[in-house]
Length: 262
Image (tube, rainbow, N blue to C red):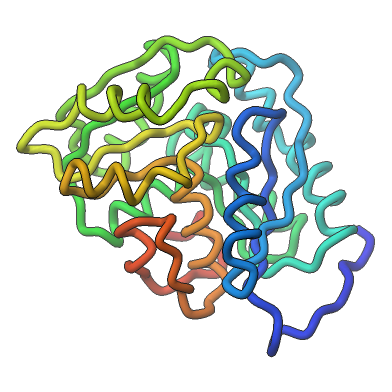
């Protein structure tokens, strides 16, 4: 791999490389970085996806090591990063808990920096918030969404309420707005639910997390939000104050050498 450009870690903000599949809500990341230039950098590379379908088969191909390693090579040829995130929930949870861990371990071997994925970020965020009972508001079709339920169960999380919106492609999800997201969240919010999870990086969310949390009065964890938080956590540097991350942004846990090791 071509050596990454050098940078002065003493003055530069933490830099989290983002591997994002295709095109949908990737603009969440540069918009956040532009709003908080002294707090973080989020260079992003689009990985190839094969076919844009919310099916297990398509997403296992999207999350294949060959596609991720190729994207990591392009990213690191242009940017020096402190950590790397595979910003795709479904392209990681479809492999199950152990498979998701193996996926990021293999990617970390290629990248040489602490590496994790959005699925593992959800698990770590729930641990950091000490949340054990959740509601899930998924944009996916039911068969795919069930894999996320199973992934959470493997991590010891109680999924008390669950809804699948049935959107078949990431491109379609990218056009969904705040009002529909809030409707989805409210449909799974009950008294027993400690936090609501919205698990699709194709859904815009970073502009709305704090507002939606205020409306619900409890944590809301969205895919792009936990991806940024996990990447910053893995840098081993102090968590910057980012209102866009909601309550999670005020919470941290010790970082590990790999997102797969927790």
